[in-house]
Amino acid sequence: MENQYHGHQQAHEHHIVPLRVYLLTFFALIVLTAITVWIATVDLGALNIPLAFVVATIKASLVAFFFMHIKYTRDRLIPLFLLASLIWLVLLLVGTMMDPLTRSTVQFEGPMQDDHPAHVQDPAERATENTH
Amino acid sequence: MSTVHTEEANPYLAHHFEDMEQQNQAHTLGLWAFLTTEVMFFGGLFLAYMYYRWYYLQPFKESVGQLNIFFGGLNTVILICSSLTMALGVHAAQKGNKRALILFLILTLVFAFGFLGVKSIEWTEKWHHNLFPVLKFGLHTDSATGAVHQVFTDPNHSKMFYILYFMMTGLHGIHVIIGIGVIGWMLVLAMKGTFNEHYNVPVELTGLYWHFVDLVWIYLFPILYLIDHPHVAHAAGAVAH
Image 1 (cartoon, rainbow over the protein chains, first blue to last red):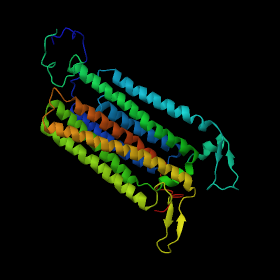
Image 2 (cartoon, chains in turn blue, purple):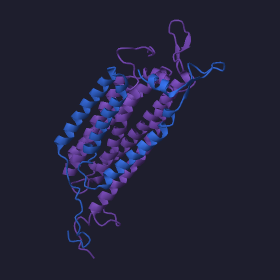
Image 3 (cartoon, one colour):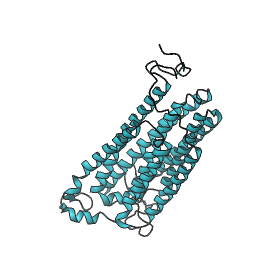
Image 4 (cartoon, rainbow over the protein chains, first blue to last red):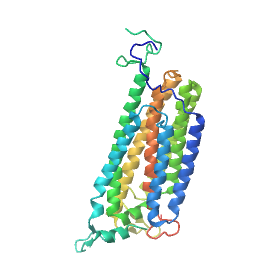
């Protein structure tokens, strides 16, 4: 390139991802979907939810890294933008949920009725109730 | 002035970019910036779900029991297949293979419509079972006696689940419809011979958007359908359906 502005080593984004990578990613995603559904049918108590998230995150990472080319891009701003959005999401979820998770809940038992007293539950009771 | 390189003479090069490479990078980063706004868009709904589930776990569990895991799982597989065909389409565009690109764009559209088809079956079923969060929510009419009774123990809060369910899958469905429009547009351009080894970034950007739509569903499926679904072992609390 003879352009006088083109002296620097700019990342050349002509990397073509091999077909094999796409197909392998596809099969991994299908297998992980089957695993997700299977895990949901097995009663693992408190483990079910974190496990579902872990599997979903693995699937999401596969889509992001291979289908969306994050693994192959040399433009570092792209993973930075993705990371920024995830950090924002964590802040949103943690920042909001830490409020209800750390205080007593007013628990309504059954449909709301005027003469039905509200049951105040302390966090410890709430924590043990939140399982299957 | 710089010597004119064949790339710089590319008719798709906007005047404010040095060369196609810079333009492509800017466009790609621009789409990722858009995707971060999408994370925010859906993130708010995920938060709402987490929040209400925390307070109304039992009503939520009763609601989830009504969902059909088979349809949810089928939609997940459909979207994963569509992501594959989209990626293969991008690959074909990069190789300058026009016929393969057209084929894969068409296949992606087929899967996308399939997803919407399954979704509409699900939603119609819910309408008939009075699971839309409207006045008749949760009311079941006994076919033998004609008596009407409320199937949920806490209908107001079970309704909350369905408000969130329809908003989240609805918003996702709107994104699928928009994706169908964009992919269709790419298909038209591809058939006109617009794309080749040197110019295919619009296909890639379409792919990025479509993979994101798949990504959201990858999280929606376990959260809405799987997490609180009554296990095969115990169906206690699940409403007969």
